[in-house]
Image (tube, rainbow, N blue to C red; front, side, top):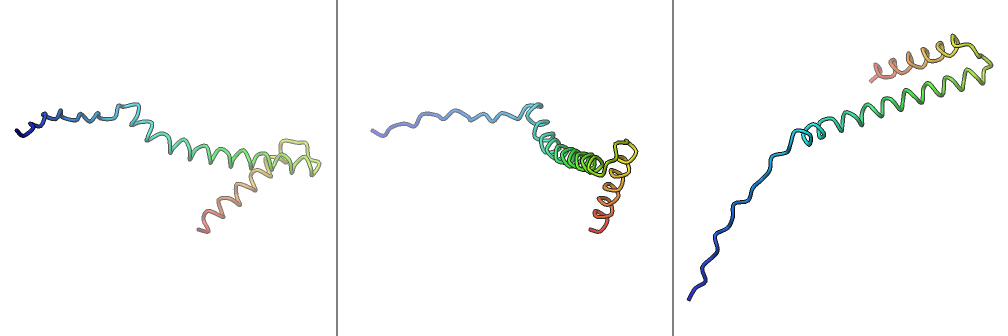
Length: 80
């Protein structure tokens, strides 16, 4: 006698829930924003250290340095 196959149960595929979907969307955005924030922190830290090394303790000189770095950055981006 031949064996009868048992009927297979249908496989249920669960649709991703809303939190999983939003996490997939938001996670790369967060990574990109974190990189941008790290660059900004680095620029602020470098400008602060340069203003201290140059002997300027005023906030105005720090802002001048920061503005120069931002100008160089945007001119670098426009180059490409």
